[in-house]
Length: 239
Image (cartoon, rainbow, N blue to C red; front, side, top):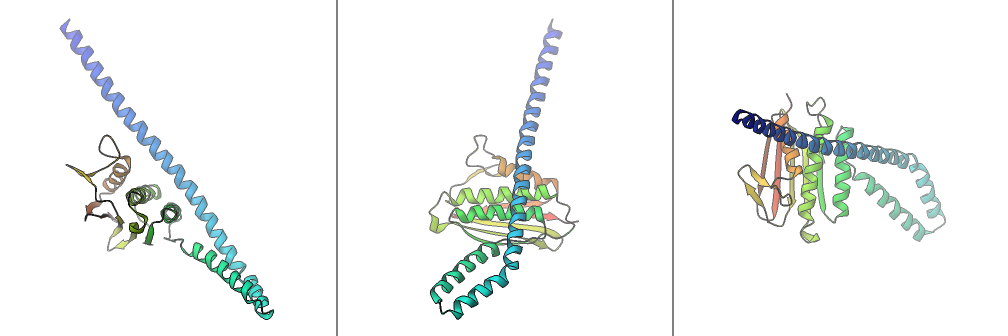
């Protein structure tokens, strides 16, 4: 009888452990699938923006002819208005970053566009070296979650204090990613470092996804704050 109880207890415990791992695997798979779908969508959006840019350049000759006609007719006010509209169109297209990696361009430019719409000052520079061992999806996961976290922190403070700086480039034999953003100065820390301020389990999916990718490629991650500023550094070996 006692043996049967022990066997039954062990079976129940094994089932509970198995269920826990399955649920965790299922949730992570759902999140990864969701982020992959978003990345594909952003890729299409950026590709469309590239086509618009090429179209703008193609029409540049027509723009010059129109401005010349305004000038010859002495219509300076319409000419000024026309030039202002062209400048605004060009500035919107010129904000697009081209890293050399289409998938990264998709997620990065999409996130930066959302940041700007949130009245957040953005200073960004990015380049992706060829032949890096990190997959496009993993890069997008890191970039997306880094900028999502930065935006979330910025939106908690007044608009005039909001800023995000993003830098990504090759540093010696590493891929270096640096994000700095303004913050409200409220942070949660645990044994393993900073914790999410919104997840009930103390560790949000965004932080966990970033750490998982860094660990996968045997990289280095450092987070630190200075009151109203928060920064994250990531180094991923390229060989």
